[in-house]
Image (cartoon, rainbow, N blue to C red; front, side):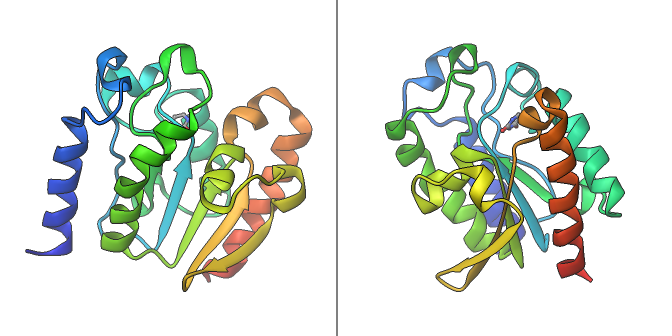
Length: 183
Ligand code: URA
């Protein structure tokens, strides 16, 4: 089976996942979307209300900001793969629990394995800490790290940039650093 077919199959599994109690409160699971051979993968925290409604990642206000930041560095949403650490919305958008992150982690690992992106952009503290342990975004953003032969780039979550203008400026700078790596 091709990688693309395997990814489709994985996403179907995620849509019907009942491994944690979040399946009881979600409307739709949100596996992620984008080309199965994308060279850049973006990983957020968890679906919000609009994502839960539609089953698509980053379609709310955070997604709008993400798309405009991408456009500034001449990346189109259609060129990247977008997903989140959790594939189901936590009630009232509460912070994901450790147990939920651990149960959902194999899905992200399989997506990475199938897509084999050149770089994975971790958006915000939950994404960064889920993969690298507790770290302050303010101290780690704008940097590349390599782990198990996979490159990662760390930046803020667009939701934080929507709340704090200074974070939006920092995120824009981070995206410039990222774009220099993509040429
Ligand atoms: N925030 C996330 O982290 N992921 C989404 O899909 C939407 C908002």
